[in-house]
Length: 117
Image 1 (cartoon, rainbow, N blue to C red):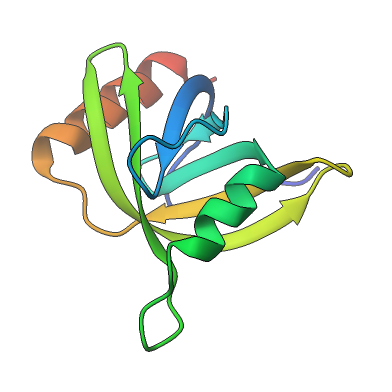
Image 2: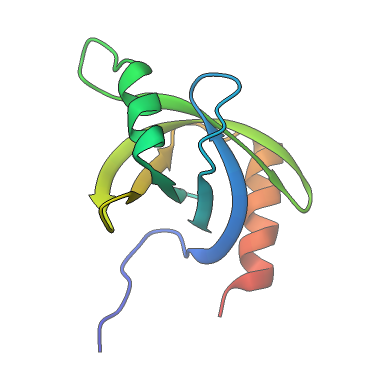
């Protein structure tokens, strides 16, 4: 049996998300979340948003990720960890939180605690 050796437990989610530039309407969704980050499912349009939202000089790609959870609105800086193609037009984006403030950390922790299996 495989075990998940992640530092933070992750739980399934289904939240609309806006990534990068304001007004992003790519239809992307957060499909799971933990205190460490989020997995986002999106289309080729989101790949383009991420490409246009340039990486810093060290090649690190960081983006503002905004979404609503039951206990509040969050807007976090996330580092793009991976992009995985799921089908011809669907992708999964692994994003790591760069620095959560205590209030947002509590919102996410409460959600995870309520949904962890």
